[in-house]
Length: 440
Picture 1 (cartoon, rainbow, N blue to C red):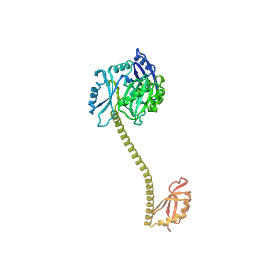
Picture 2 (picture 1 turned 120 degrees about the horizontal axis):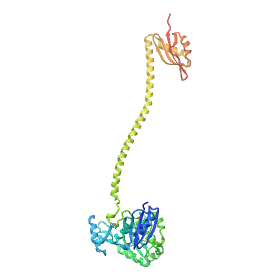
Picture 3 (picture 1 turned 90 degrees about the vertical axis):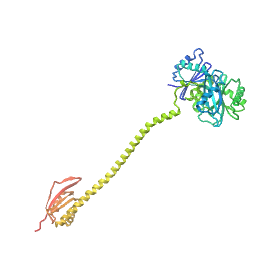
Picture 4 (picture 1 turned 120 degrees about the vertical axis):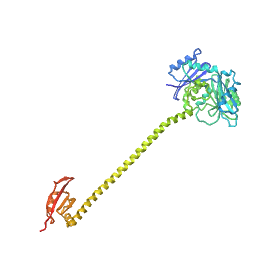
């Protein structure tokens, strides 16, 4: 599995820390003076570590300088730094490799630039070592400059001097929040000499007043009390981010200073500001603008798909509302149809009554007589009255009992069923025809 591999190169000795996220780490040291590249390759292959290497140089191999420039457009800054740096480096301009980052300053003040320069042979030799180890360099930075990567992302914006010991040397960093303002490499013999160098560094940077002091690396706990006494200020361990504390605790005590630098190199940003790796060899990492453009490009089809889905959902909701309304109206339509059928039946009855009246048939008196004659269990569904007689359609508990009842009427005679009696829902359905009784 690819991991972030940090390599700290210090006088032919390579200290390596490999990270997989922030959950695991491996640490080893390559000290083979004859062929360190092949020894590094063998160690990486034996441990199954794949991926590009992030390389950190020792602070003693580079020059770090704060240069003040007049304000100009961005296209001229690189040239101005190139001309200015010639006065500060002890090697030929064509052999100079440098990187720079602008420091915070007021809008009216001159432009302050922090420059890191190294000799071309130093850069080429380090990159050749990584290439011979069959790896690709992802970044080439100054190892101690990556130490702020181990701090919390947000912390009080206080000025801090961070002293980091590895071997006999101490790297001094001046930080404001997580921003690097200056670095130096000193070789103090004791805490008193280190306190003197810290004071000199603060003076060079023009920092006056109280600053926080941190000490880390080899034998840091033993030096802190003496350094605090010499500075007259409290000295503490750096407030590492909680996610890194556990890994820092697993680093070997006998190589803590170099291992912490290798860890910081591995944990550093993908695009460090002070990167000495030639631009042609840097891996492509999308910028924020490119990420925004790619995100918008990827979002456009998604937005189109979302609009289409929204239209489909809206249409389905409209169809569902229409279907619900149809179901609701269907009940009302059925009720209206029933009322229309009942009304038609009543109209038929009224029409029959009117016809009977016009034919001198006393329909009302007949209805009254039928009401009195028919038993309680009999129901009329239809009544047809004409000059020949009467036809009754309905249901009864016993249809045959209706024949003698109707025969007994003084108005009707020849009472008979005109169709077979059927039974449904516990009732007998009948159809009876009777003639008018003739008058003597």
